[in-house]
Every structure is written in C-alpha cells, then in structure tokens.
Image (cartoon, rainbow, N blue to C red):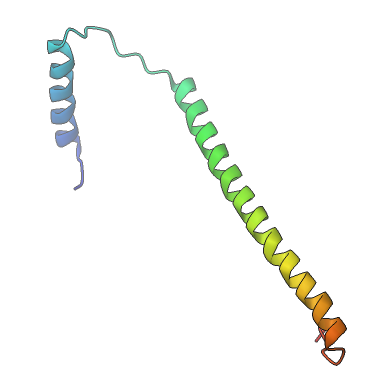
Length: 83
C-alpha cells in the first residue's frame, strides 16, 4: 500500500484526535539530533554485528582449511597446493 499525502494527513488527523481525547495536549517537538544519534547507533551496531559474525565464522573456516592443507600435504606429498 502506497501512502500519499492525502492518506498521511488523514491518518495524522485521526492519531492527533486520539491523543487529544486522551488528554495529551503537549506540543510536538522533534529532536533531530536525538534521531540522528539513534540512527547512527543502529547502523554502527548492525555493522559491528555483521563484521564480528564474518570474522568469527570466517576464522574457523580459514583455520580448518589451513590445517587440512598442512596435514594433507604431510600425508599426500604429491599434491601441489600452489597450482
């Protein structure tokens, strides 16, 4: 469902009516600095989670491959791993 300006205004009016009927009369003040900090933190956490997952999962695979190559080369000396 695509929201255009008309639908957005209608939903905003309904929401405002709900809050006013509940006794909420505070003026809306948007703190853009707080929003920017929250977005930056969320992006940082996302990048850190993805990076740590990649490093730890990749480390095990790399270690497994290196050990297999090392021990495999001791058993099968005719295999050329540089090719």
